Length: 404
Ligand SMILES: Cc1cc2nc3c(=O)[nH]c(=O)nc-3n(C[C@H](O)[C@H](O)[C@H](O)COP(=O)(O)OP(=O)(O)OC[C@H]3O[C@@H](n4cnc5c(N)ncnc54)[C@H](O)[C@@H]3O)c2cc1C
Image (cartoon, rainbow, N blue to C red; front, side, top):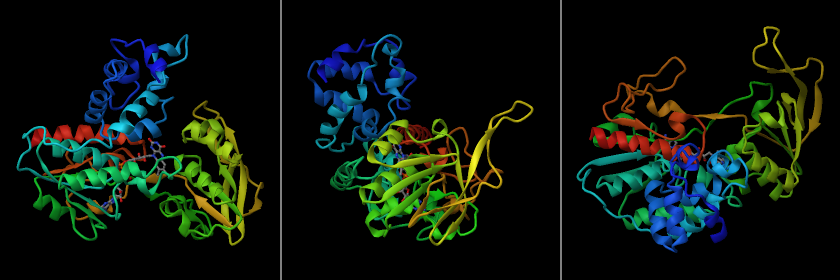
């Protein structure tokens, strides 16, 4: 890694950080500390900027972020900063204890709904600014998608466990198994706390609206507890995003013959392209331009699709070609077409929703209609990435600090 760090040009205006990274990781400053062998100082700088640095350096689509924006991209090989970041932050995280670094929010009580990346990052910043924070999550354990979505072969669960220990050592209460909206209302939380930050993710799966759909299994449900599903021999995953890739790669590891069926082309797949390559390397087979039209007990009816350019020259649309129905046998069908936030927890709270059914958020990040409720992560962005969830939590924490 040292050779890689020596290649860094230490740009004054680093594009990797300023344009390429949603949390503006201080790459040149950390590179200097790394070259000087000051690994703990570099680790602290990274942790303060992004408490999930040990995770994001492992799961980020770096081609889209830092690596893709490195100036060396033009003529040489870009710097693999994420590997340097991994080396620094994966070791440092296990040494780090939470510390009250200021008294700015002393005496303030803040509830965090959701203990995924957004909730965890916000809890670190708010606690270190002096607040008394409480985390609530519908799941028994912390981590959100990091624990209950991304498979262990991609992200070791010790990167979630370490936050449980860190928070317990600091005396931060974690109320697992508590679903806001069912076990306690948001209205109640808003009355009991000075501020509430909702980082409840985007786990509500979209549906295909085709006959027999109830026979399919949601890929997210499978990923939550992969060993609880009996898959049979042949598995088909419908979808082309991160969830589809993790589901097919997990099924292959359970000894299944696995196919991914996607209605558009490879280039259109929203999944990280590296994940698609890894899936192919794992032995997953892909069929593109295929849309399911019916789910049966023993398989799926697909239709071929094609790209059509509208006569007015508008955006290319993918449409089903009538009369191309064909049956494909399988033992298990997973659907992973897309997810969105579940706004049920806002019901009855007085939150103002827009025409599309999303909460209206003010300039200060407050949910309109509510006195002290902010939102962060996938819950306000829709399904995105870990680093973007952390960036949005940072914005929410800044707003909370300003208002409180
Ligand atoms: C399978 C999969 C693979 C992914 N792979 C990658 C990847 O490789 N790289 C990447 O950067 N991103 C990836 N993502 C996206 C990334 O994980 C998310 O963008 C990120 O986790 C969002 O963080 P969050 O804190 O907003 O939400 P989440 O991680 O979803 O956490 C939300 C938490 O809120 C809790 N919650 C929900 N409703 C309630 C309620 N009513 N009451 C109490 N608690 C509630 C949930 O139980 C959950 O723990 C992946 C996503 C999935 C699903």
